Image 1 (cartoon, rainbow, N blue to C red):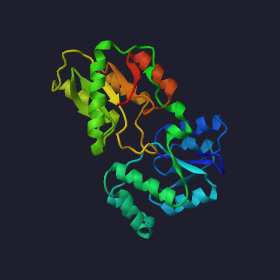
Image 2 (cartoon, one colour):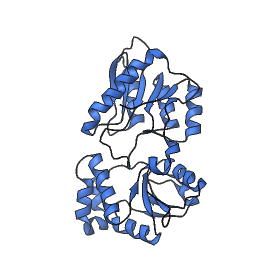
Image 3 (cartoon, rainbow, N blue to C red):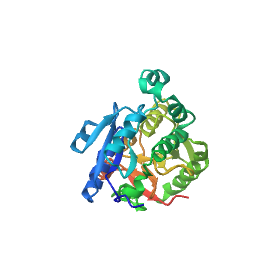
Length: 282
């Protein structure tokens, strides 16, 4: 798709540093960028780019901003928490657009994201995936840091990838921790870092005993996942959390997982002695 046909690429910015990183990557390649920062989520750092702040429950304002910016396409970047019913009801736009919002908040996360994408595209704004506009932020195949993945860990990596492929069809998380040939934790709505903290508590309370001290985090997208939204990601915080709970390393599906703050991520992994490897997805 020719994203240069007219107007800037609009980034719908949730939390974290990735929306700004994406904007800077696009700008460095001569792409025009416009950021719609979601109130309560987007970093203040987006002010370094052309931007507006919008409420995530106000689709009318969001679409109006896209039209005023003459956006050529939309990219979703950064996380958001699903609002509860009380938060939704507290915003007047919920009453004006309850049909759309009911459709957005019904079902699981995959359903929600597809509904959001549908709203943009029905309004005439194509939604692009990060892999389409900035493929350089995705993991490549092979060793990514200076620490190599031991051959003894590869069977557990394969188990993790097979598990994610199997359970991903049921809209379950994009991460799993494998050790000694068994699954010891599965990522749910709490996210990767919280899952790793849970492992730390289990090990501390001796609920998990490992013959080899080599637990591995494996990350990959779901088989039917719409690649325009919510691709799995790891960043420096993942390394810090992994180090605390004794991970041996992290394996990610190549071309499938976003490396947030890549230079800092690789430096943190090297300093922590964790391997970081991209492997081909099933």
